[in-house]
Image 1: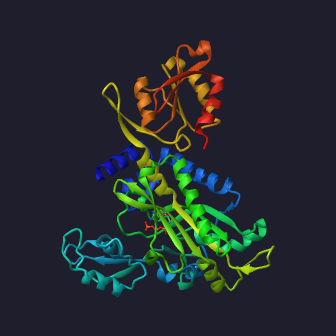
Image 2: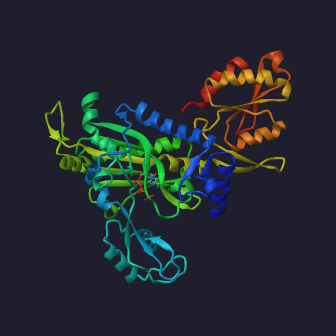
Length: 456
Ligand code: ATP
């Protein structure tokens, strides 16, 4: 499985999807840069999420809040104080582990989140859990490792000037709940979504872009009346499922895992991990949680501003309950990458690498290929026309078969070949990535034809 992962990472790098961050300086752990193809595909992922969750939903509106927030926000949210990873070192081989992961690998039914360091150490000792690296059971104490990045704001560097890089985008939504409700005159139920960067000082191995220190989240906070929350929880689970299906992710690679009662956070009435079958195993892709009125209540208590909602029809006053589907744009990117990559054995005995991406996700929708240099003037004309509508590639170098393969390998769903006849009949050949079949189409029908294929 890790061989598959190496292959994917290599393909992502050599074709321009994802590079190691600061590579010429030997990198910086768990940071990655999206190359020309990667940025196109990631933008597509974000746009499709926005389209489905904001534009097409009758309930939801969008937001783009600041990364820096008043530090009191993180006290209210529980991130200052609570947001840390329990680290433990093996005294024998000096390998560092996350204690909660050691426990979970030992017994998947035991979830140690929220345990004190002492409770964690005691469990590890009582169950004689061994270091996965060297097989010995001799650990240090647990140290709580803070996950939030700190920096200073303003000229005077003292404790008061400490600010944090947000570890999630959700809090920007909660603190704007009243603003948005008032200014849009939305009635509960309604939701607020945002896409943005989040930062966590992760210490455990990254598995490529699965776990990064700087990543992007796509979060929705959906506000509803208490006691309607479990219905909405189901509604958004289905909604997310449909979205993943429409993106083309294979059903056998997805599972929806509802948390057991014991596994739930104390404030949550229901939580579901959407997991994807990555080459290194099942991992959380999307977290969907019924967070009750926890977040708004916390902010009401800490800010001393009312975050209650007055129901205009019943005159009831309440703090809305919240359903939160939260997904990482980078993790979804990784799922798409893993899911679409195929090595296909062709009839002539050759294999081709092909990324079977939904056309809406593909970095380039179409590649324009002049058969020989003689057609390049006409081909450039066609490229300019198509570039007004789609992200396109233009490739004139090399044998046509090789150029097709190159486009297959980066998931371009259509190749347009401009040939000797084009000048005469004003038509081109359109080749389909998956079937490799070709049709001849008049140039002025191309935009329409492609538009239909790439809609989501
Ligand atoms: P994990 O258990 O993997 O650390 P989490 O439960 O802390 O994740 P949440 O806080 O629920 O994750 O964040 C919501 C989503 O944000 C996750 O489902 C994931 O898609 C994404 N995400 C969280 N942390 C990272 C990270 N370090 N790198 C990339 N994506 C992340």
